[in-house]
Length: 417
Image 1 (cartoon, rainbow, N blue to C red):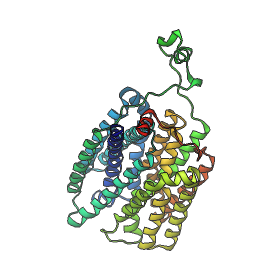
Image 2 (image 1 turned 180 degrees about the horizontal axis):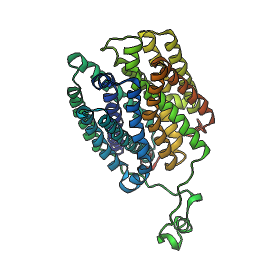
Image 3 (image 1 turned 120 degrees about the vertical axis):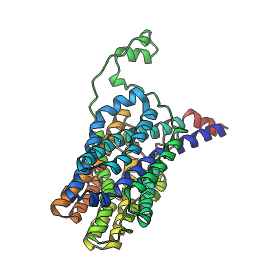
């Protein structure tokens, strides 16, 4: 009994370290966008282009992710991409000009795309292997990583505005998180081939026939179902909301409502703290109310709360609006990932890919809108994105309240003991 429980806790902690790693690395450099803007004399449009380069890098990684996952597994892919993300911070510090900065951002996007798919595959494997829900809490550690990075940025700004000193401290934290992750990451679960996609040899092998040793025939890439497409759209706009708030909240506080340099990074911290709190309770809410209502109500609260804050103006209303976004959008990503996992590994990979697209490329669109019309209007697009999620959630087949996943053999052994 103790061994099974210890195995789950060790794996859970290790995979949580991966989620925290990605959130911490991401928020570390986006929280210093004001500094990068000053150092390189960038307009809002060029900031948007920088973020777009990261999104393009993530998009470029998607055709490779499935192949790399099958060849090396999520554990190896997560480790390598995490190392690259640590080195990216040095790239931001050493970039001599804007074109090189764009290349660094593109490399960051590639590595983020890989790690995002790998760590969510690890989370899905954890739930399957031990028969316990964990995805919401794992995503809470991603939000915790965002908040810790924002607080570190705010603290370092009090002592020094030097980018290299800040990123050196951050790199040390990332190294510790990766070492923790390496202590308990899981080998991937074998993925059964759906009956509709099986070759004759695979069907016979699954039935115990004589052809069980015959090599499988290659099949084309399966097209996503309509439900999977709706999940992908919801994930895109949900992560646009989440990512844009992380990328643009500091600049909104500084340039639009004229917050002090010490207060500007706290926008990310407020969002992250609310997301952590919400995600810690999200599994209980899902059990009581169901995934669909949680996503619909939460995304509506996020969109309307931010819209009202933008109309009122000021530092305090902005922080309250940011809190509404953090609270409301928190459960969207975990719920959609769980729904995608029930559709199979291909759906999970596609939804993870679209999520990375929204997280990295969406904020760039906000930058272009801000450059043309002002950052307040750009943040209005973020509010609209949250409301689009509410509409998409009505088209998704959410898990039924009375159909919890059956416990696996290890969990059954734990109860028997």
